[in-house]
Length: 154
Image (cartoon, rainbow, N blue to C red; front, top):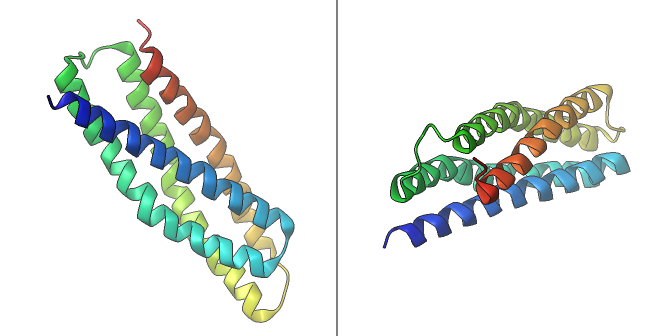
């Protein structure tokens, strides 16, 4: 009886987590590459807000609902697909934590550039390169987790 609500919460929170990540990454990438300081300052402000509102809550819900599902379905913690999923989730979160800090720096630097009426300065682009570099393994990890959750390979 609890399995369907647990599965629904797990799928919904994974969708919000992944969707927010892809959506905010797309907008931050496009805004930054436009080099439009006003656009970038606005987008980075909203990306940080979205991360705190959606990503933090779903990042907490994912392991909780995953553990709940594991208990309800009787999946052993030793199942390789579960171990890989957990490891990849830890990797994705290890990438995401510095990304949150980087996004706050990007927001602050862009806001300052907008106030000063200058282009995005070199520190913005340094933070941006790190943001991109950390986003690639996080994206790959989440894609692999989705595959593992659906396929549950032996």
